[in-house]
Amino acid sequence: MIGVVRLIFLQLIFFVAFSSGAQAGDITLPQPDAKFSRADERSVALGQLLFYDAILSGNKSVSCATCHHPAFGTSDGVSLAIGDGGMGLGPKRSIDPQNVPEIRVGRNAPSLFNLGAAQFTSLFHDGRLEADPARPSGIRSPLEDEMVGGFNSVLSAQAMFPVLSADEMAGHYSENEISKAVRLGQLTIEGGAWDLIAKRVAAIPEYREMFDKVMGNTRPIEFTDIANAIADFIAFEWRADNSPFDRYLRGENALSVKALAGMELFYGKANCVACHSGQFQTDHDFHAIAMVQIGPGKTERFETHIRDIGRMRVTGNEDDAYKFRTPSLRNIVLSAPYGHAGAYATLEGVVRHHLNPVASLMNYDRNNAILPGFPDAVDFSILDDRAMLGEIANANELEPVELSDSEVADLLAFLDSLTDPLSRAGFRLGIPASVPSGLPVEGKEQ
Image: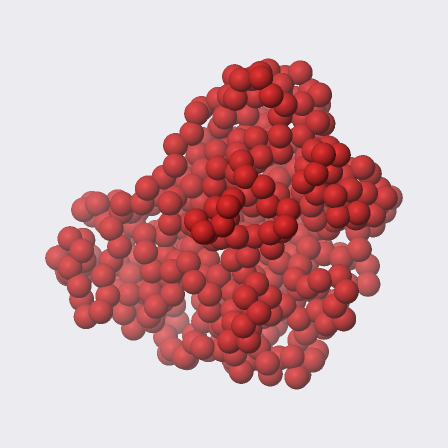
């Protein structure tokens, strides 16, 4: 009875204070008004097949789904992925002894939820890909000299990066024609990596027929066409805006007592909203919170250090050192591990890191990482370098917060309420039984 009374009391408080957009102090609950792109269902169906087809990778062994699989909340269930040169899926993925990769992928595979919403105008942990109307292509990218028109969105343009990465999809050096082109810097030119990938796809009759229905048959298939179809699929498949929290914002009594108490903490005492604002709990900005770095980090191949300086690598501004993009918290319970390097295996672990970031960094338990075996790995080199740890700690901008164990439990209950039931139960189209290339589909439904 006490629980019921508390539930009604909290619902009344928050419905009156927030659901109409009214302010409580400096805090306002978001409006459930996100705008999503819409796509031709034929393009979505085409993008689904391409997303799960390893034909886009150099050695025809890795697909987009290898590191962004629905079984792992559109991530891959490990701290740092093994892309090309790996076998299997998720935490069971292991090294292919016939094709041993050089290093792990440097950053955790981010989830793909709600990337079709208009608010998502920058992507990747460091935001290196951003919408920019001032540029001819409409997009700012590290591949500025190679950037071409034809990408329908930032989400579409992000597809160009994994296929050009040796560690992710391209393969290494002279292993295949794609990796050779990348090695020579031949990316967007005729005969370059993108062109070779597009010709592979066009040579498959079923793909050519599907593209004809989307774009007509008057011109060749280009890589941008492939990327646009994949983006249409991602935007459709992983839209997640019907969580209990969304329904609460629409005026329903959809939150439990603990979730309401957690929401009070999130928008109040814990001040999570300082960074995790908006309908999807992200300010789309970059912050240094002494997040633990494991693995090789994101560096250039010529660099001798393996530290990951985050946003500074994009802007060159020292004030951006160790800042990373605020992740959306939608379906966050589904997409462990957490952090730009996947340093925390559990949601509670990363929540507690936020309560005292520097102390958490300095006392990090390496058992928190989920790392498939890798020869000669440099997984914890940064943690063994006190000077590097000091740099990360000194950049921290997050003040400590004291929460009791019960308050942490309430906060976790609220985070769970950000889960869309459709995402928990499955997805709209799911995993295809087969793909036009005839290559194996990882994790396919039986």
